[in-house]
Length: 371
Image (tube, rainbow, N blue to C red; front, side, top):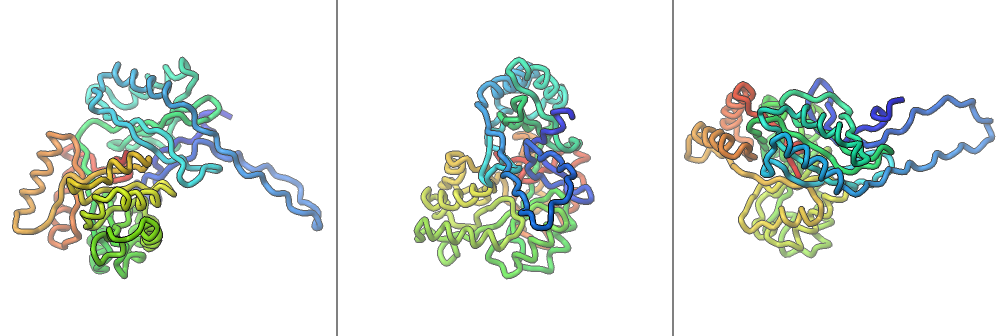
């Protein structure tokens, strides 16, 4: 059997009905079980040995190989970023990760051509480029992994297609069950932050998850909230686990308020350590100048992303705000937008997003952009 087919990458997998939800793949699959004659009735069933996961190797040679190939393809250093990616599969603990190299492909050079160059050069470093477990989708990131020939992971690779990238997060979901139909009418690649303290949190998360939508847990922070800055680190840990349990299927977490909390490194460390227990990511949707969430997450190896824009009806014209986001997409190449689930705003967003792809703007989920 082809070794490349025995190795599955840490790549996104498609959920039912073609709805894209990025989930982590194992680097080594169990071989199929062979048929055996039935054991005698009195025999003690044999126990299958626990699977042993292939340990990661030094990522240095893989990183040097990839960066060299990117430079040759004209990818600027400003378009290359480093982070972590979860390791999933038999034998790996829930918190296992390995290095990620993320880049944006230039318009003149498709991602496929860059990856082919990396694949051709990999044997020079005693490595191989593992193909994705699922087919690449147009307009979506492509995922590969550099491994040893024996399947030991070295480096995850994520290539973004050329063009602006938008991530839209609808926050504070679950407080009004009547809005779920309108929320599900939005583009399938919108991410939903479900309020963990809302009575309908579990029901909302389950319905969104059943529809193949991405869900993160919105953690209430601040005075009078389940998480506040006067708590001990141990109390924060326990409360965080309890809140995450109220949002089934969440792949990450985000704060709701709590600027004093997010400015406290001991408190943020306690939250991030819980997220790291099963490789959830952290989304800093507060984006306070005093927030230590992003640097603390990098220290702990927890993937993270930060809000760039916030939409609200307020007193300003929604259309003007949306145009401002598009200007930022042209100038900066990406935007991460947070919006409340206001009915009037949802209508404007639904109409606006219908034309995004025609304008060559890629709408990506949070899980596709975190580092």
